[in-house]
Image (cartoon, rainbow, N blue to C red; front, side, top):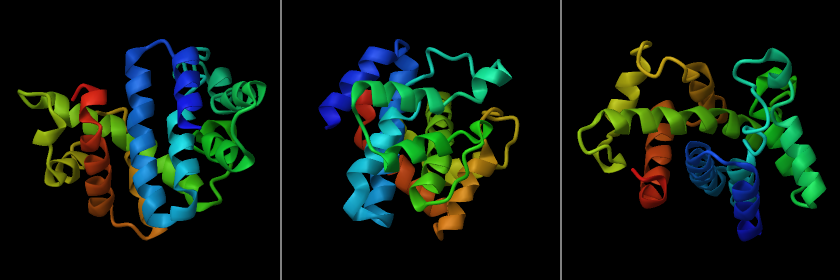
Length: 189
């Protein structure tokens, strides 16, 4: 199934940045799934990998109307491809609060937090001279959370929302960093 999902990522996403982001969210979601719902961790990973499939089709960051479609359009694409299930679809819709989808299940809450932390960790890695994830420490992540001008677009409330699942933020930062470090070559970091 993952091979088919990767094929869909390559079919619908043109930007290297979005593809790498998709892989990063997949890695973090897989790690969270293994911790919180091991029997469904493959679905967690797929939701992470596919969550932004519509990003090159919608100008959702600059257009409020298109922002309401982000996630919903991804589900249309997946259904047209005959891929996925309702569990994955719900999580993908739930990662974007602009489309009105409520975060109900554990996976919904996890993907909402996992999406922004990958970009945040990447931003931290890029300020180091070697631009490598191996240089990033959990302490750097927790410290930078307090620096509101650093990666100002990163939704800190979404990242901190992981605590609703009983995971302290520092533990989430460590889990996310380690998951991304495991695929650092794929991420070019």
